[in-house]
Image (cartoon, rainbow, N blue to C red):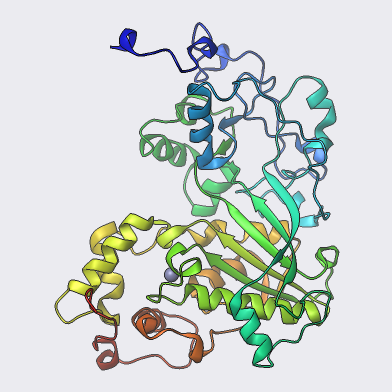
Length: 423
Ligand SMILES: [Zn+2]
């Protein structure tokens, strides 16, 4: 029983009585109105998610899935529940926007275009609102061995500005937490907002009752991973018609991206995207690598590894004609990435044309084009960069409509090309 436990937690911080946020009459102050898609920051209004903050107008909590760790830190007595961040010197290292797309309520529905400049809501902050950033913009040097290889092979040349002789690349990097405007997200999927709210409520174990009880709260900070953008070249050139833009939209694959696992083409394609972005920046354009936390087609890594086993153990070995089927057996679907929301970040960056899209995926190309962004050229991964074990994935994707002039036939797809589990 509770009484027998040693007191080391943060019981003293539990306010009495518990404040339920699920009904309008119970909140301490009226939600601050938000005019999503308004032309300027002040009329748009701030997103306020902190419990007990004046004007709270968003369901959920800041920091995406990390909000659960914050709750643990408070519970363990290591964090003051009322801690307000000191944001001195945290402002963006490069300015981003505003761009005309920010004032089109339908172009951006899954992030807060003003999320990096909370200081613009000074009046609300002075009135007691806890307005926190959902976007941070900083600068870095990155270094990937593949870029060193590209320099040695003569495909890239160091310029001392964007690319150093040792392979260091100067970038602007941007972390973005998801902020969903529920009405806009529902519209994107062609469903009713009430329907979306009901399913989000039910399939998260009833985690956010306000989804169904507070239709007046239109914004939801979902407990999911966000997006990181790496920009190559001068970000101030974004939003100008004449700027040549290269772009790789990449969905997280920890096994390949970080650890070099050879069952897929993720890291080789990512590195190729960085190479094209560096080239474009050196030619005076801007490159953007958009890295989305959507591990294993947003099915998660446990599902992904289960599928690997099923693929490698099935009769006939790991082959392309059963590639998607094995995923569907385990997960019920082939993919849950919902690329419909993906172009939002491109609009946030002021991009209206991508000159070099480093992707063969129609699942990415189609929503980008449907959102009104022109795509001039699609750049495939060079064949020599595809690992042998990843041929299964590549053949399956080509057969399923990947952008290619070499669609494999059914005989080709039936050949086991992947290693067995014990090889
Ligand atoms: Zn992968």
